[in-house]
Length: 342
Image (cartoon, rainbow, N blue to C red; front, side, top):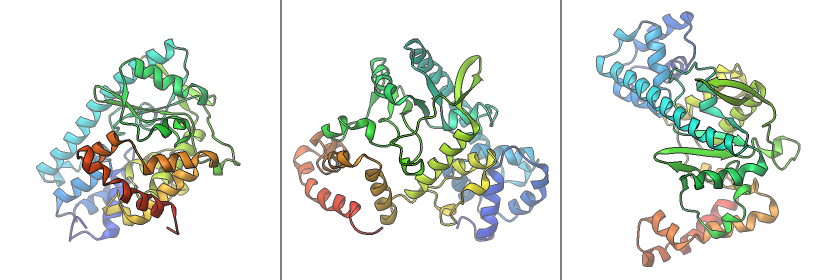
């Protein structure tokens, strides 16, 4: 608990009010009351930041005219967070425009997902939707072409864990390994949603069900509101399965008008990321394995047990000799992850 004076229920209510957009004047008096109960502002600001809503919190407090209620240091931290988000979003947008030019000239259709799509539509391009990278959706058959094209243009990926992964790279998860260039990261999605939720289809890609928007003066495509909502809910549930629940993602779904579609766990209010807990590790890993076509799962599991020596040296921050001794424990760990009940 970040504050001994404010109850957990009031803390949760405060955080939910601070992640709302746009500001509603009807919330001002309750926001005033809840902010008045806060004593440990340092911890509260840290918690707000951990949930990825520091820009939204600064916005709502200033829109309510309650900035004088906060200690100067706390309000400055929120304002600085909002400014940093605005600057970063502007930078991310300019980097995406460069990618857009590359893909357009190659005749590859792509759709903006999640943060970039929301920032330039529902959040009004004010830096309120905090982002760290760009997510795009391409046709399934264009995924590898897009990935290699960007690599040709100077983007690079992290270490591939195993040569076995290279042969099933489009079957592991919903997107290819993240690419980066000069600090800019992009993820290329080739499918959306859990196949089990869509009548057993191998993948679902609504790239042809899109709407056109302007990002500055550049044309861009986003999913229809219905498809965008499906994706955001699935994305939230997937991360919740792995122990991560941020109010940033929850706020997106509220903004699209589907607050009742999901619930936010009380246990994640104080600690948004709990993905190191055993139960979440097992659940997330097993879900990942089961999402791979049955005949290819053995490649993934064996590749995970026996990664390349180069990957092991990087993972365990040691030399080749010491890295070898980390292989046997991996066998037990992987068998533990895929076996038994969660």
